[in-house]
Amino acid sequence: TADLIQGRQVLIFANLKARTMQGFKSNGMVLCAATADHSKVQLLEVPKGAKNGDRVVFGDLPNVEAAKPASVQKKKLLEKVIGFLKTDGKGVATMLGKPFTVDA
Image (cartoon, rainbow, N blue to C red):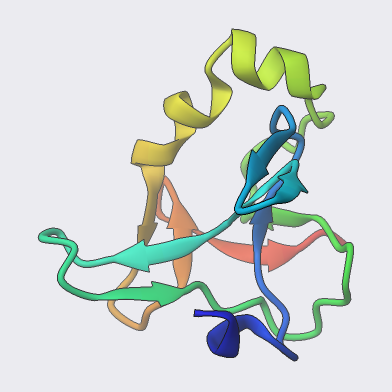
């Protein structure tokens, strides 16, 4: 709900093709974690020290230039990476086992 998001930082998968959702244009998706059966869904926690607009990286995985929205859709980039996003036993978001951190 809006109450869960209002006044807090959230992680966004950005550069998606613009879509109208509930009357508003959206170019991104708020990232959440869910249990395997989707019975519990929670917003991902922003890495400590993150400022609005910071880019999040995954440990020592290569940091590539952000794709343009048309490429994200055409190449189905979100669909290719979404299965590799997990949380560890402490609830920290990871990709291929590498924890989210803020790009320094």
